[in-house]
Length: 287
Image (cartoon, rainbow, N blue to C red; front, side, top):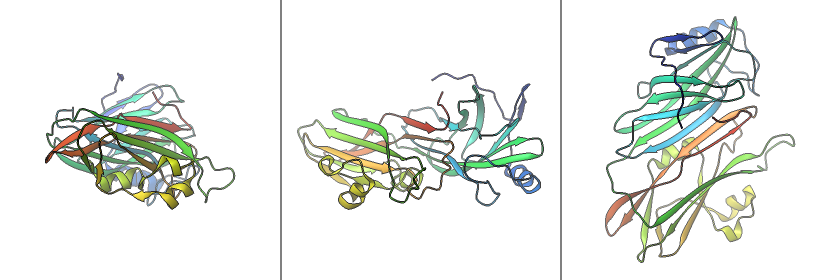
């Protein structure tokens, strides 16, 4: 996707909005001095702002060191937006579309290693402010050759949680799988950052489609936690993840982006298999 980005290494002022890359100290001072603003389904606080965006991405060795974080604007009037992040994320631009669409914050990420961090978000309107946060996990993979002949797929859906209230929307369900089209077994070792994937997206279940009928209880009862898997020729490994089963994210608006890369061992050599990038949103539209 191509977006027109506003560069925010210092600050930017537009007729209707101000988009700022702010230090953490600014966010904390603003929160301490501003009255609480009501938005989404949670009152943001300095200590525990709601997570409204989750981003997990494995980057191949030759890919650009850039990610685009989709930020849902709050369900209130605002005229200024500020964000801050750890040093492993360097803000490079903000794209603001129509009011019903997400803000896109572009970050530069390290050329190697892992960046796991929280991005603090602050929307203000005069003396009122609303704070939120995003969880970002980005992993730069070693230079491994891609493996052909393995068909990855990735799709999203919805699933009802047993603890949900009658008016709660269904949780986000991610389904993904790999089919071994080779004539020899393959070892599925995991993803770029298994612990980071679980932290960002949720517990990974390996499941059998014959025993999964679209219910959370099916995954808990019949699924098994992910472990390194030997994939026989012609076989398919099925995996499911439920975003935020504890229902800590606001139900008003939120986003999830995931682009995992599987690590596969074949004949003693490690390879990569890239899954399609998947983004989903609720209460707001994607670009």
